[in-house]
Image 1 (spheres, rainbow, N blue to C red):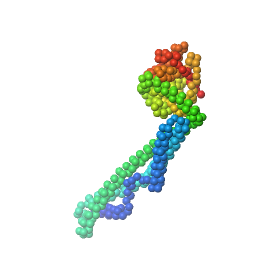
Image 2: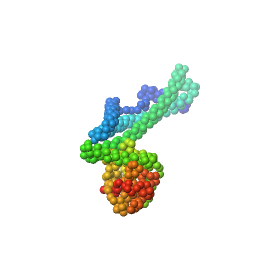
Image 3: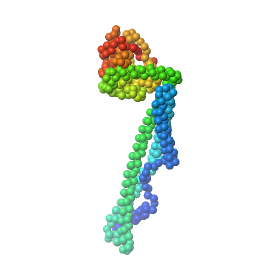
Image 4: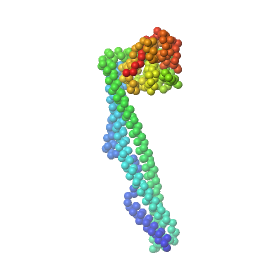
Length: 415
């Protein structure tokens, strides 16, 4: 009798619970990603679209200006538009970050509420299923005895089946909602990663902008804003670069080499064709690779390693910015600054200068020009590090070049 009473109580509990449950709004998780208000989202999207269009227009303008010829006016025009292009890229990236951040904040709040709602629904659903299962386990005789008449008996049977079916459907819907929740959570995590990537990109754009503004200022300083001075400096730079090109071409080209770097008590030997930096475009100048034009840059890096700056590699000098290169080309300026170290090339007399350290010499060879490091020696017998020859460290200078080919002798001086 006691068991019978408990079952009747459970049936009544399920009935009353189901009726209340069916009559009140069931907490249901959202099926789509929560987004900011339509007007805010629309405005942000419109801003990004407009900025992207300006970026596209400026990219075309920069291309057109570059094709107009090498004059100071055209070069300044390219720089001005490149600066503005970078500024637009910064603005577009900031707008993307803002849009994603708004989406993430809004979705995080709603999903927090959604998670709580799902937990509550699951608890209620579990109690319903337990109650209806227990009530449904009563045999027909027990239900019949508890009924007033046959009609009441049939009603109770049908009602229990209806409750159980409803709970099964709700269980399925809840599970689907949980799956949707997990999917939306994965989307949010992806958006957070996008924000991190955009922040990194923003930092690089900011550095690019600073470098571009400095390069323009350096160009104006070098040329003093004069067209003839610009053309003269540009001609000198191109002549030197052409000499580098003729040397490497006559010597077999600028193929890359591996395993060239070696360090000892003197310092480090570097090769301009080393795979670590050989493919770099010097100062970002297309067509001027380290492998083909980097003999002077590599020679300076070797001398710096002897002076205790092994952290400054040839690639560091090659990518140190337009202010280190004459008229923003790939020809290295006499005075440069790399990783906080300022240095200059000062003309010296070879034998006199060797007593206090290595000397960088420029030579005419094989129809072009080249730079090597003279490490020691005197009276025509010199040991050198050649940045072009494979494993060209501690080799005889006169085995490869003539003394009469030397046209420049420089000492590296730290400022």
